[in-house]
Amino acid sequence: MAEDPSVPPARGITRRALFQGAGAAAAARALLGATPAGAEEGPAATPWRTQGPGAVDVALRVNGAERTLRVEPRVTLLEALRLDLDLTGAKPVCDRSQCGACTVWLDGRTVHACSVLAVEAEGREVTTVEGLGQPGRLHPVQRAFVEEDALQCGFCTPGLVMSVAWAVAQHGPGLSEAQVRRACAGNLCRCGTYPHVLKAALKAAGQGG
Amino acid sequence: MKAFRFLRPRTLAEASEALRREPGAVPKAGGVDLLDRWKERVEEPEVVVGLCDVTDGAALRLEEDGALVLGALATLADLAGSDLVRRFLPALARAADQAASPQIRHRATLGGNLAQATRCGYWRLRSFPCLLRGASRCPVREPGGVQETAGIFANDPCASAHPSSVAPVLGALGAEILVGGGPEGGRGLAFEALWRAPEPGRSDVLALEPGELIRAVRIPPSAHPVRVGHAEVRQRAAFDWPLVTAAVGLTLDADRIREARVWLGSVAPTPHRARAAEAALTGRRLAEVRATFDGRAAAEGATPLPGTAYKAGLVAVAARRALADALERS
Image 1 (tube, each protein chain N blue to C red):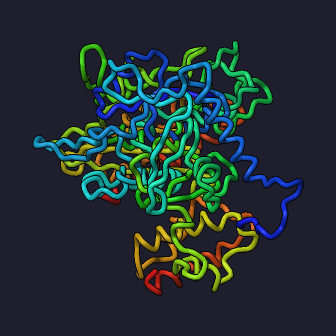
Image 2 (cartoon, each protein chain N blue to C red):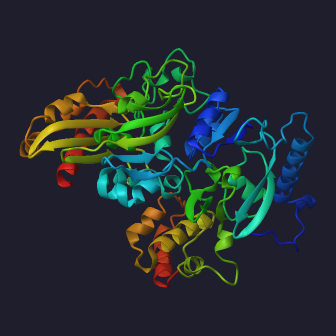
């Protein structure tokens, strides 16, 4: 879904760059703001750390790499991944833990990135669909999705790939149809590609995905 | 979502202390539903006590006296996947495994499940009036109110329904709740004492003192064999809320029921104990209840609204299925 750099975007601005600019502006406001919002640590008397309400530095481990970003505690992992780290595989659709389009792994387990705070992912391992495989060296589940035509519009696909890859990692070559269905129960596909997703999952598992 | 300060205690004791020092602060474990509510601005906390760094709250262990202690920060996936829970509390493992979706079970915790807010659509949208949010009446109870998922017991003045499907199983197991951090330190609560009846203008459902957290659930050891069964009625098998949940716990003397515990979910503002069904089972032989228990006693005392009349029938079905489940499995 990367924007083609050879095509000049309309009016010289991309939607993503606009969001990124807005994010940077928000961060700058927090840094310069009238409130002590940028303070990362609370009063010295507390044994616990306090973050926010303004932007704080957060160190995340995403797809094996250390990434530091500056976000308010209210920013979701999904927003941070997409707008701060430019990892746009996880999709914002319902933003309410219902559709599964934003599915990523947190410490190897599927979660809705829309329903985790970015600050909560500190010290945890985040894996997005970009970390699963790359063009030219696809993860077996991604390859099976292509081979089995397991997508139509593709918007739910990154989330489904993460759920299927988790199921394959959990159950290995013995992955059953029922286990695939259960693993994908939190992923909605409005195009109805489920039968092909099921075939792709079983194929990937059989190939030792 | 409104901006908030995020506090990161590392122990349950620190978390309690943080809640005590910051009146109005909200504890967040998995917080899947909390985030929905904050995004909708139904609730707008200024201080959140994040439990993500707490390291002493998720253990699942067998005590020396045979009690099972389940840390409140264990996720539903932890419960469903635990060898200990699957071996000793299989009905609980199944109930946890059927809830929501994998993504949610990987985040949602045992404590958060017990502390769940109602799914009532009026309460969840700021544009509607709601008794719990300060309105003078409950719109569910008004003519034309959307009633299908409302409570059928103790539903006046608020017809909300507590959606936990784990809670009825824990009730049937005779669980007690360990809460902690209050002025006098930790204390044990009888299962039903965890919740309070709805009051106008109060959205919280837990009967906790300021600074208190649900620390753990304790299943006491039993000198007698206990059988527990669980059944949910839903519209969809996958990723749906229950319309009605029932759980039946039987303490046996040979083939006679010495004590019965019957709990229902999604039918009242708090998990609901069906005492008439317990009376109908207690003292009877297993073969007798297998042949005659029709579950209708579980619906005794129901006061359904016009849109929830069907739920009384579902309660009987769920209670019957839960009993069958208890009799089938050890």
